Length: 164
Image 1: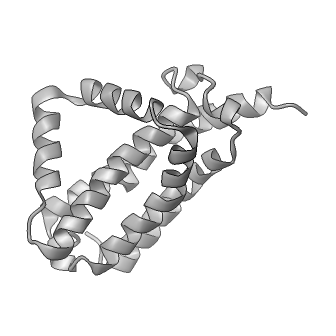
Image 2: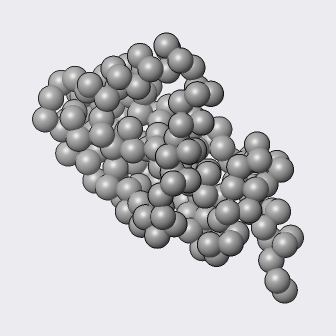
């Protein structure tokens, strides 16, 4: 358990920082499949992270004004009912349909927006609430860690193919 929101927010920010390198990739690089990342493109990884981070943002907005979050209940029930594979496939498809400019904008704005909302959510509703704390960790810090190898594969392959 975290002692305060600042501790969580600093750890989340540090965990997100390596992924910011994706924003500097060209449009062409964003759409190149990478073998070591489940065949994902950098765009796929960005969309995947944004989707789950977006659920955390929606939950933070709800918890800023209520004791409960319909988003947490809904995403947990969907995961339990269908599992991750179909959900993540839908996420990949949905983000692939969005313009790259929209992806880039969300990638630059959403992480800060999430942190901003978490600063106004009473700690008793997320950080000092064991279930909610675990859920936010799963959507952010732990989720980022789950995809560090994908990030390394993407950046490694793209640096090998970069003109130089």
